Image (cartoon, rainbow, N blue to C red; front, side):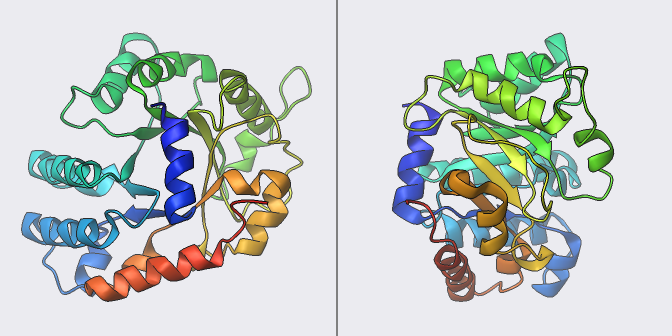
Length: 275
């Protein structure tokens, strides 16, 4: 089954929220865990236990595992395997972007289902052009996986590039959305390729109506984004939006019950899945 089909079913079952696993050193401190591989492993195992089978999508942030070298990547591999073994879709947040054989290698590392780091989807950066990401789209299609392309981000530096206009008058963000949508044009009920669009970007004039794919929207919760912001920014396409929360939920750990309650509260806040 294609990624878009599996994601659509998972959202209907669990709700739209994507919950992150971000073992930030500060969160390890808050949980009373050491800033070492043992602390990383304990934090991650608790998150997996709390979220597996309870969210449509779980998003480990690769950078916080890479901090610990090969031992950290081993923890990440185990988390991905355990989540997927429980039937939970995994979006690996790696934001890769390159050209040619290098992009192809990244794609196979994370999307080829024979790889030890294989996830259900990854995040990618289109700075070298959406076309440069073709290896990721191709490997994803061959493996029933998905790709989320950065389009409009909430960081203050983003608009300098993302709101700039191309030779045909479209903004870069709109161009990214249109090119990703072209790859989803005949998919049903949802395309395999999506966008990353911040929930705190404000009005951009970007039209997402032809995307026919999921939109990951970070910035809700502790970063200030609300369900009302999501409805306002995305309009009729809000039902395809995956609000992405991390610290708003993770700061409730290490209690499993508290983590699950926090996730449930976020799911309840975003009730616009179906019109």
